[in-house]
Image (tube, rainbow, N blue to C red; front, side, top):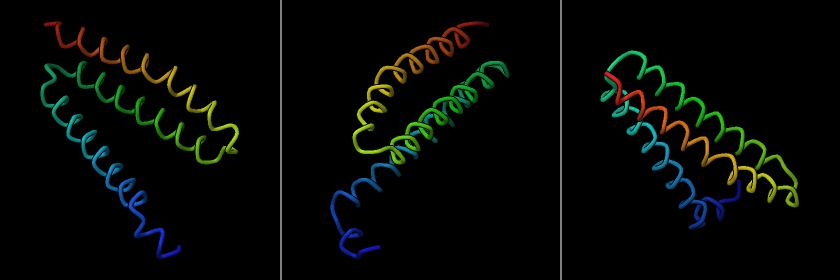
Length: 100
């Protein structure tokens, strides 16, 4: 690896951004599990986290292995499919949290 890449601000910012995002996901998952009222809600949280993580890893894999011309289609697919996944997951978790 070229030393100039390791000192490039974009590369450093990308690493820091990824680390902060991953840390935010871990902290959010921890507190969501901590505030869960029952086992069913905890299992739903774990399933939701695994689904989001799987979708993100799949997106990054396809994005990084695709030709430059095809990358726009992966971004479009991500932009169309990811928000509904988040919305439905959050809606399900809110409904479970409201149950007694």
